Image 1 (tube, helix red, strand yellow):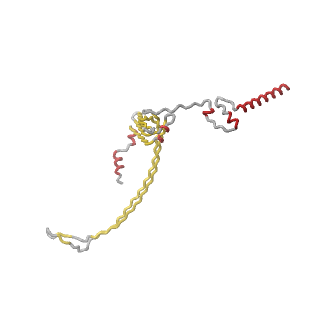
Image 2: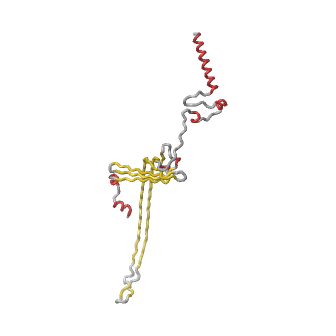
Image 3: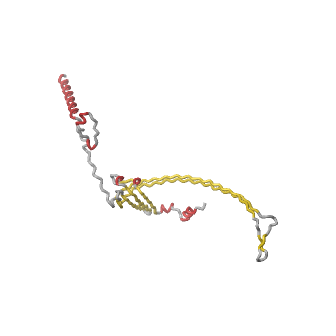
Length: 233
């Protein structure tokens, strides 16, 4: 019993001495964190440490690669457009008119024209014209385009911006989809994974063409196209 008490006292003394030593020497180093400077710790000043200063596993990133002409840059296209239009027209027009034919002529032989007085009086004409046009129109469209395409650097402008151009053709049996894209991008908008979003491109032009039986199924015929252009009523 006495020996157990002595052993417990020795353990407490060892723990207190180790705690005091740790407080005097500062935080103990580990694989994930370095010791903070002792000067600021001793003075009780806050230390704004960063990963570069405290982390053993921190590594400097390599400098970004200089973009050259004909380099490939991936463009992530995610464009959405939605429009709503509502119009109404109600036009009314009314008019009255009255006309009297007061001068009549008749032929007197071959070379003579004389006035012809009407026995029943001058003929008269009167009327009322009413016209009304009422039209209502409503349009709602929603479109979206989402794909990824690799663009080639065509030109590097003096200010460092890049002229990009891309073309992609997808053929599945008889169906053909052709994508064409042009735009101007800044080098700082290019992500580390060599990708730029379409919303960051200036002077952006996107063209999508469909060819095949599916396109022919919903394509308007020449008569309907002509009717939409003339639009008589």
